[in-house]
Image (cartoon, rainbow, N blue to C red):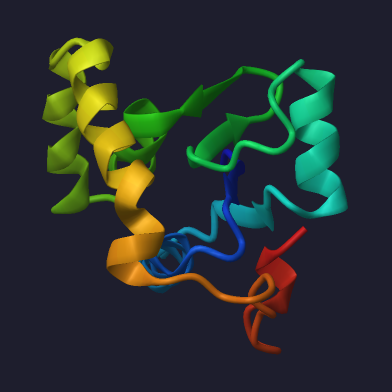
Length: 132
């Protein structure tokens, strides 16, 4: 079974809700999580020469294979959650510049629309093993 690491903006309410959504539907226990603000997240960004202060994209990391950002990351997560969420992978047929434009628009206004926490979420004791 493959393991994927989802890196997310730890203070974003939309991102935190997305993580909770994934956890509830991860029946094969294949996803681990880390905030982009954490030591792991910061090291990940720096090792790949990515901006370590720009948290406008979720990142899906498939160790030893690749990492994906923005809409591709979101759709590949859905693809790995099984039916019916895997049906969303059909949107991978749309060119990424179109998908990412929509993703970036939502990302730009996410704090305004969904709110922001003062600090990163703390995982519940039952979910702690899923976080890096």
